[in-house]
Length: 288
Image 1 (tube, rainbow, N blue to C red):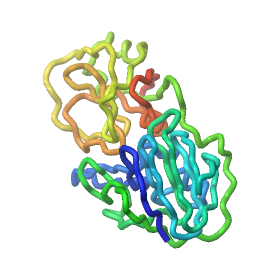
Image 2 (cartoon, helix red, strand yellow; image 1 turned 30 degrees about the vertical axis):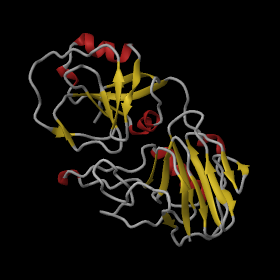
Image 3 (tube, one colour; image 1 turned 180 degrees about the horizontal axis):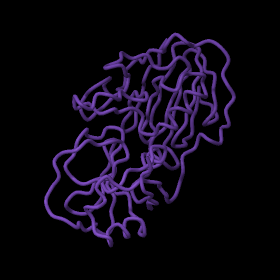
């Protein structure tokens, strides 16, 4: 029982919800860049939310199944054909042994998630089946000719889920964040500008992070920090004043001040943002 890969776009990775808890060893969590879409794909086929899916960057995947299976695709919306016939995006689809599955380029967004009933049962590393292409930890990026095995839990009913929730946002983004921990390293004018003006997603981005372009944020003090721990959604501001928002494969530590941290559920939206997308932030103070 497996998915046989016949063609690929720019990148396809096996991902689950990551391997948290190893930051002290310098191991980042990784996992799906858009966790909400990953979870939904698993829900559609009746998996646990942490089952492994295939994260497809900008479409181009073509593969066949060696056995009857149930699949679903979520995230960046794309045309999907099974055995040469169009099928619904964001819904569970039954496929027969030998059927070809073809995923087109998404109309918007970056990452489409393919789930199969039973999950993809590649070998786990540190308790996770997630690939981190930056460090090489976990399964290697998917290549043509790979056979990705299915897990055993392939029987039972498939739950009904509202397909309308399967699509990622298009257009400008408004992202919720909390200030700090180092917002006091920036002038009052910089903090005001951070939320008052729109930022643009640059072309320099990957699963590590997204660079934002706009008016440089001025610091209120000189010098550098000792390295501090980083989390997904942390907005670090290097010396050039242009923010970097960290995603799934972020480094575990960094020495530039973090002006704010995006709420976890909103990081999913930024992980789908194409270059040129305009981003605004609304920030609040942390509450205990």
